[in-house]
Length: 141
Image 1: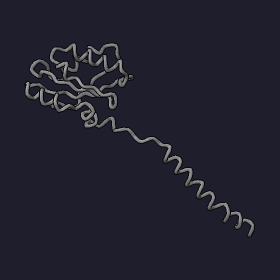
Image 2 (image 1 turned 180 degrees about the horizontal axis):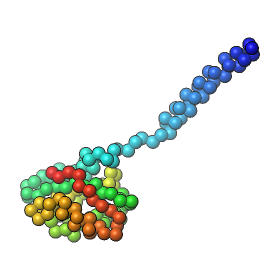
Image 3 (image 1 turned 90 degrees about the horizontal axis):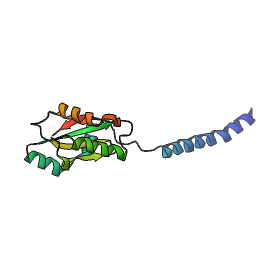
Image 4 (image 1 turned 45 degrees about the horizontal axis):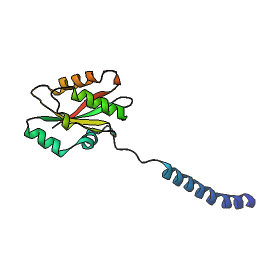
């Protein structure tokens, strides 16, 4: 019986420290969590440009912040497709288009007298036709 106590006394601390080392390795191995992609403010902050907002307010325009949804939303080709679709809508100020790859978002100024946000997004999403992308309204300033 004393033999088992001696083995236990020798084994227990080693198992404890091995478990601590393994837990520490897992803690160091894990990657940091990215910003919450669901949060509206993360999308707004990614594409916010004070100069665009100030210029839009002075001209009587609004700025729409949108999330970009789709399989390859962060790809460079997706950004180009979004810019083309936005530029094709006459109410959008082309110089105000801002995009972000992470989180996948865009913002732009537009003339609210010509389109309301829902009609504007229908027109833009129609222009995104076979790309698999969709813009979703998040906030209007």
